[in-house]
Length: 273
Image 1: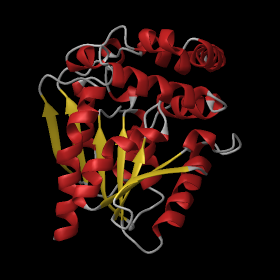
Image 2: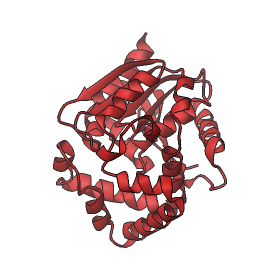
Image 3: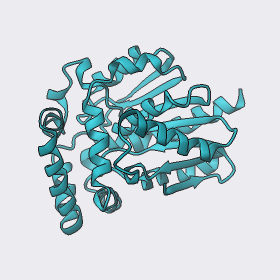
Image 4: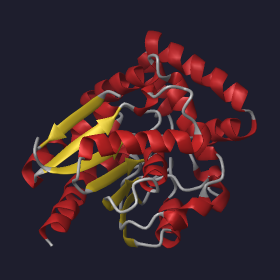
């Protein structure tokens, strides 16, 4: 499985789980801070995993790939958006090796609360829950847009951006980088993207009690992709959650950008104990 790495080459191992849609290149956001804090950040191109790996088999595959990177070292997991869900599920297959799990703009189980009405992507999630075949067709159409009209797809996804995300969408660098990630996500990887979303919308609240690693959560107060109530729920449902930081004025992607220094400092502090 292809890897993207950044930060300090011989630093503390951090595995980053990108969003959906998203791409492993998201982890490059951690490059400068990772170098400063001595963290080696790696992201798996998990959407490229063979379609035959589904459910627990898929999460075990990711765990196997991570262990191949880690050797005997302890592992810190970081998950963004739906990547937070995938990180938590993979963590269950790495018990004893995970020093911490950091969640940013995390999606909570849809069955755990009345979250959907407040989610910008509610129509997509409802489609995935109720009509998975139609969701796969929608994903194929998004793949065509990503290839031939990526700017249009970007504008569609960010049409409801609010708070600091609305400012981000006007920045040329963010627009260019995110458009590149969208192309990567859907170029030959649409089945992998659909696998993550379909797994996310299925019930998984019962698995949270099995995550024994220390968890920290960063979440935008104005997040309309993953409503703030999701962070509050996860903070209560995860047995070893020690921190839920709600960041004023931030939404989904803006929280990812702003959380990096605090998150990296927390991981560095873990290694100094």
